[in-house]
Image (cartoon, rainbow, N blue to C red; front, side):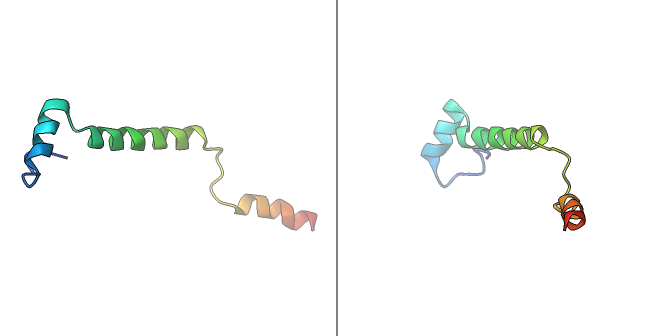
Length: 59
């Protein structure tokens, strides 16, 4: 979020100028963490159809 765009809330603009945009930084870090976790926990399963072939053979 850019401080120049949000002129409706001058106190918020002042806080962003002094402390940085913590909300935007947190959202960016949360998305980065979500992507890293998705990559780490990716077991190579594209969809549920792989397990259904083994289930069909067993039945």
